[in-house]
Length: 509
Image (cartoon, rainbow, N blue to C red; front, side, top):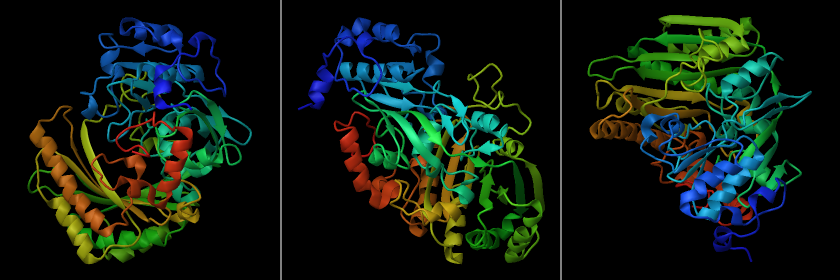
């Protein structure tokens, strides 16, 4: 019987002779050397780069999207360039009993894509291949590059609102974006995936091959079952998008929130929207911005009646009302915050010589999913939580992100993405723009988001999105997975029986 102990002890032949394929491995004598030479040996066997402490590239290589986790110092960061590199890194980690964190874009809000062990980085597995009826994407393909490549064919896949989020973890967490009310979450369009398992086997899963693994990858969350090295996705045809925004004075907040929640709940699938309350500087006495923004995928003339309906429900005209009919690529670049930038510029600084986007500093977001509208009392509590504990220098956001539509026409057990009854994702977000804020500032942000989360929890459906992972969440098993958690645990035990892929909120923990 193969046990975790035998996995770690190893001893089944030289790594250079083990070809990528479906055969498992349980260790390698080639790596069973002293600690003084182990990283050099990994470098020798890897096509990609291995970055170690002391290397000039190390300070940048350890970075996630958020600077909040810069104090986590990996023993090494391995940039994998092919499937064999992934197998080699997993084998190496087994042989040396080193924890592994899988990283594609590094956007884990809880910092779970880094570790004090080995960061297995798949950002260079970023191929975007367009076939006659499908698209194949590497886990390192970023949203902005997918947009630029597919738009030339009039195609798109479901991506989020951030240009640098990669498909690796995003799709495995379900993946919500502007197209989701019309076409579902990103994982609903998944046709197959190539996965390197903990024992080194490379499997292709689909509805007919390894169906349990395929089910789990569609909403079970990244870093749980293996390292995905390739996705096959059914694209959609999208060439135009009307972007709109309406703003009201802060004094109309109760009416706007109530009207928005009822309005979007009965809107057609072509319409998606978010309500945002934003204070760029939460100093005492400042008033936040209040606006409803979104996208329309129908004929441009068809949007105005829906916006008129919202305005009528609010009972007062907005301060501003804008709607622009744009190409899909231009509309998404604007949504990314890159409306005046090139695709090359719309990357995080350091990704390429032209990249301009900064990293996040210290940001914390907490929220719950909502199935119903909110009463006047609930809205009042939400606003009170937003206005509580003013603090100069902090930015604060309260938002309702629209869901429903096609998302909710798939049953909660059909895929691992269980959230098929929610209408909104209600969140509180706060942060500062300094990369190393003092402890009292962090405590203030945690206290404020905690107060907001208490309101969201009181009126939500006890569910939250794994792609907006919350390291403080105690009921995360139910929140992320609901009744699907039991099947996910059984799938985890089958494909990763020794819990090699683990982090504080990993399935089976």
